Length: 129
Image (tube, rainbow, N blue to C red):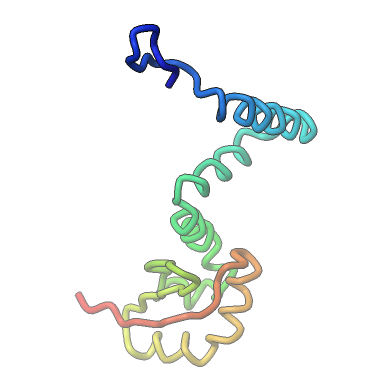
């Protein structure tokens, strides 16, 4: 704030921060121009990640491609339930299917990681209803 003629403060631009902000903005503008046109979908994904929705997007990606990760038969008995801090939690509808998924957990984790690089581990849970 700049001092007012009567000694008070009046709203205004802080000279110490003003030039730095305008330089940062011009760098950002140049960076955007250098990238060229972007697809709307790519921009939305980037915006969602910046707003903290990255894990939800990753989970949606895994859900949409789940049959390719585990195979159609296994996919009909288990599904991604949550994804947080690199841990993919998968819910199975019966102990036998959970055991099958655990048996293939290394391959499943690798395939999931090919879609979502942040997948670090797999946890299998049996969903009781």
